[in-house]
Amino acid sequence: MNLEHVAQLRKKANALPQEPGVYLMKDKGGTIIYVGKAKSLKNRVTSYFRAVESHQAKVYAMVEHVEDFDYIVTDSEFEALVLECSLIKLHTPKYNILLKDDKGYHYIKISPGPYGRISAEKQRTDKTATYLGPYTSSVVVKQTVDEANKAFMLPTCSRQFPRDLGKGRPCLNYHIKQCMGVCTGRISPQRYQEAMDEAISFMRKGGAGSVEGLTKKMEEAAEELDFERAARYRDRIAAIEKIGAQQKVMAYNHENLDVVAAVQGEDSVYLSVLIFREGRLRDKKDFTFDYFESVEHVVEEFLLSYYLSLGRGQLPKEIFLESDVEDRDMIAQVISEHKKQKVIITVPARGKGREVAEMAKNNAAQTLARGTGRSGRELSAVAELGQLLGMQSPPAVIEAYDISNYGGQTIVGGMVVFENGRPQRKFYKRFTIRDQVQPDDYAAMAQMLSRRLERYLDPEKKDPGFDRLPDLWLIDGGAGHVSVAKEVLRRHELELPVFGMVKDSRHRTRAVSSQDEEIAISANRGVFSLVTAIQDEVHRYSVEFSRNRHGRGTLTSRLLSVEGIGEVRATKLLRHFKTQKAMAEATLEELEAAPGMTKTAAGTLFAFLHPGAETKKELTDGTK
Image: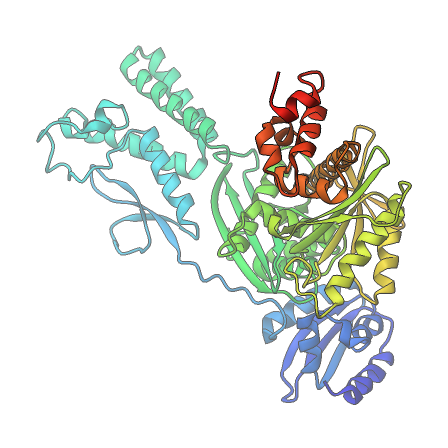
């Protein structure tokens, strides 16, 4: 990067007014490569040309290609937002998000004729048929078609009607009451068309609307004493309600709603839109954008670009966001005024609204998860943790540390590693705290972290657990432990985000802590589960090591009290038998055969391990 040119651009930016407006970054050819809005043009534009080395990779790449910039002052932030949206649409700049939906479209086909069928199709090839759609989600289309056919007992076999009426026996679907049995020849075209009309209404209106209409028809049939027809309606209502019980996204009380959520990957932002129409999940759209400044920035640009581009009748009345954005109200106002239809954008905090918002985020995370071998929920939790801690990107690799004191005698530490939300046990490390007689968590933590960094910085000591730095350190403890960790990093001239994991009075994870504040995590289910799992795992690992060390230390002390057993012989015994239980269960012959042992020492040890069983003389000479 030409730093002299950057300095010139910074000087030009310092002369900008402290007013709202739009700025246009241009490359050497004069092409606009980025359009942005600002509450203060001077503050926003100068930020690109200050401390450029600390910029995120894609911001750095954009600045590297900026030859010049222009700007337009507006009377308000709202006008700046409208103008920004218009200029992005006009110039399609390289570094603004551009909507790309490379998924194929899917349709619900309703074939004509007295015995038409409902099917899922990828193409609109039959000009005589009626099509519902397009939809981008093949899963939603297939699910809807399957539910409609089952609820209204429409045929899905390969037979053609009326050609095959009365030919052959009914198939299995008829006998399990998933088909009305058109092949029997007892279903009139009028009765079949009635079922088709109700199925189409079901697909368009959703389960609640269909049940209401069918209930009214059932009651009318009962009043007319047409009990056979009333029974058919009753069965259809029961089938719809059964589907509704099995499918939680079958219906939702919002008639016209979109739900938008995004997760951040290493280089991209993955965004999903769940589309509810007439109380039913109708479609899902997935988008992937190059990561530029922040997830919030991507979501803001997406809302304007996507909803201003929708055709008439496609705009929802309400949009749910999984996470809030700064200009939410202004964006809703721009969309409403431009489309001449009021649109409300909200962030649901609880209840069913929160559930569908989390569902949208999980869908975005599933897109991110493809090819990574990780679940969407795991990656979503990692991304949410990064956002909560103010990190520029999700912490793919997390190291957690804990100190364990067993009775004030054995002081050890444990390090566990989580990668993309999952424990990586092959990288776990144990530390025996040296030269520390009394328990001191801060001193022990400082020693453990220092030794970990020294192994990383020492080119002679190659270790797969120490040869890389993580994206985040989590310390079991509060602000004091965080301060100790940051001081260790400072001494080694390294930088890492560090936070503590804080427990409540019942030893349950309740927050993460910096030096200055605690950040509550209980309201975020994914982050809470992830941090709890990490804290529980590092605590288990360090306590297990502490108990093992304490047990071995106690046994060593006991062995040294046996006549004829010194430090060398005790060490060989421990290496050979591994545990006290194995040593106690050994026969006299097995003790004699152990490395470094003699018959006399073995007899003395056996008597020590089995007091009162036999005398030492009897044990050594084999008599009773």
